[in-house]
Length: 247
Ligand code: UDP
Image 1: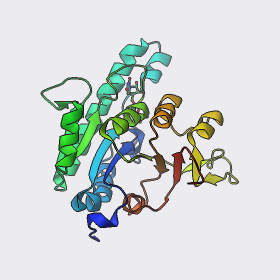
Image 2: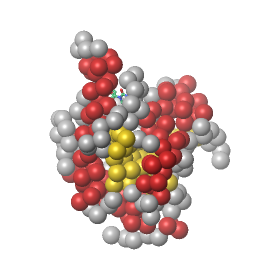
Image 3: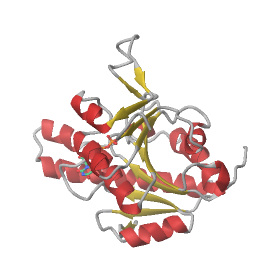
Image 4: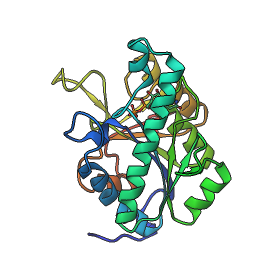
């Protein structure tokens, strides 16, 4: 594996948003161990070089509050279950990172002392400064939110330079590239265009929070080998959502 020093990178502190569904790999539910291993492998060069990496993981591979609500469940109750699902994913990722000699802490927005630390912003920053991958679990700790919003919130709180959102597609298109072969990919797009065109990048709460706090969002597909590193070195490997596309 190629080794880089800090100077090879454009960023020092980043937040990576992983969806729960991505962890399923080829399975219909839960976690395919191949995926966390691939993620660890992708993050390792940057970790070794001393980059500060925060992670927010979703829970859609296990439970989503909206699915519970659609089946007649109380929405807040379903959302609480969804948040607990993200903790399971966070612990799985932590285990994999540690098996790859990467120090890692899980911080949960819902207190559960026996399995993880509780999220405290200043402690999170301290973990990052010490070079530990820091996984933020349990979303925002509130129902009616998503882990995309949690990612936007935590990225702002810890002063990340970019929110890197890993998705199934390699960027943002003007329409669904799976259904339409003529779909056009954007290199850059404004937050306002994402909101106006109702592009399914992140939910509107997350996009608005990034807009208000000038937090760039990089949308990319983490499946390609070495892509995380290329992105960190400043290559536009997907689509960047920002205020001004001319800059
Ligand atoms: N959730 C929540 N509050 C939050 C974050 C998540 O209630 O701040 C719940 C919500 O039910 C959501 C589930 O946790 O459906 C899993 O998160 P999400 O759907 O964002 O995961 P992903 O789509 O990234 O796998």
